[in-house]
Length: 174
Image (tube, rainbow, N blue to C red; front, top):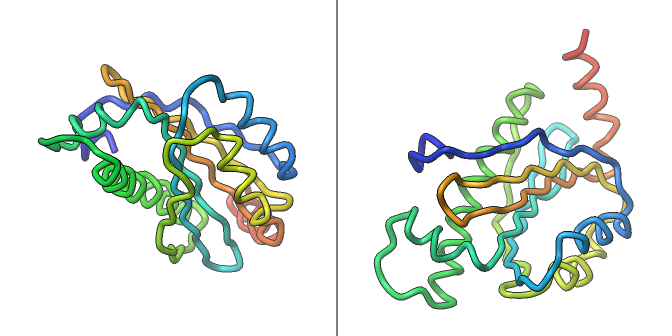
């Protein structure tokens, strides 16, 4: 991302937890203040490991995203959607490909799906909570230096994937 956009990306150590969907709802609701968010979800699968990447953007980031991607013109809802999909494609692809390489596998990715635009985080999760039960959640927070851009990428691995993940990780640890 940093090389592609020629920017410095602040990337703290990811948070990794096994969560119930109710805990995920609670954790995400803590981030919610008065802001609204837009989110994209994209599934991935490979070698008995599957999950979804959930990318959540603060709506206040769109002006800076447009500037960073050299978009010239008025920013309306359609343009925001295009920007959201483009950035989601970059971030989700880079992250899942990196994890797949480390696990010595490859992932096939589904088409990205917009979960909502300009809504509260709690609405995003409640509307889609039937998709998750218990999950391994990896939360990666991206911030672009000198821009008002921050987003959270949640990699949500299904409960059925945990055994395969553990086997691959134990192989790497030996």
